[in-house]
Length: 493
Image 1: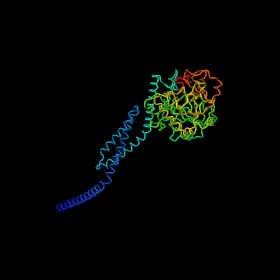
Image 2: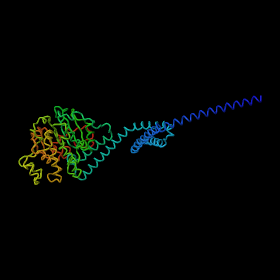
Image 3: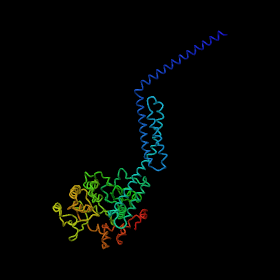
Image 4: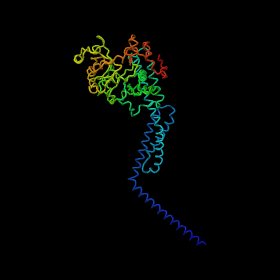
């Protein structure tokens, strides 16, 4: 029994040794195969895969860090979002620093999971991020407008069109209310579509240009013209304003759309890239510090460049009211001339000599001081004739000559027009345009009633308390009193 037991133990030991040997051989073979595979693949696929994973991780870490920086500026309600951004960004940065050839298999799955979470969180935050960016921009605009108007009031330099007279605060208030409404609901008031509607460039329609920063006045011009038109849908108004006022115009016309199907295009100076210091002496003089040059007023000399598809444009000032259909202006024969306007001279008054400095030899050579002056307010421009006669280039020459303000007062745009269109202006019948409602209390009622356009030129604008009572109702009846901001801003309508 004893001998048999010893043999059994020896047999078991031999079997164990054989199993151990086989196991070692298998392990050695596996190690060799793994070593060979690692050696063959390491110089090729692993580094590229490693670099790609590291790059993805670092890119998403940077994106989330940027969102986190913005989220810190938001309200306390965004604190959890900030923590999420920072947490995932930290994980990705940590993973990126730990990635190497030896850890690729262990970290790849974790890294891709974090990247997936980062993409989902960034996508969800993008809409809020973009909206907050727009709100911040509009907030900056509100502050800029407020500061500009405050400085102007202190200096007594507010433009008469926007705040002359006794109640400039009402218009200031209206602009601020409209901007605040844009801030409160930025996404509900869209910007212009990337592709303008075809009506804006259709030369077969009736096109008007208005250059103004007074949204209330512009709304009256558009409303009165629309109601007087036989075919309102064929009338297109191109309104150009300063960039800081454009959001206020957008809010007004989004809440109170143009009546009867008329079309309104809202534009800012910045929408015209050709308006720069190298191409325009107006821009250059303003950038050089000449604050006497009112940019919006002088933009009228760029009508052909602003609207290259159009053939005829009617220029309206923002202090007019339209009482009769203006479609007939597109049938007025200009006789090959560029401009049609109301002549204002009578006897020896209101002639070129009143507006231009004829002591300058260059003026004496080119112009007649007895030539009859005309008025802005309602003008018909043949843009094809304008381009033919190179009127914009002529205007540029005059602006260069008047750089020191010796030929005419640069604060007034009329002398520049008189010289630019000298010998190129056809008189309009007086029934088209009756002037003086902003300074003359003795205009005959029959003249006002029969006029296609009445013009509140002068300091007593109809939106001010100093307006003539006998004329004010002619303007206020076109004010959209359902706009709640008018009551809030104490307009005495």
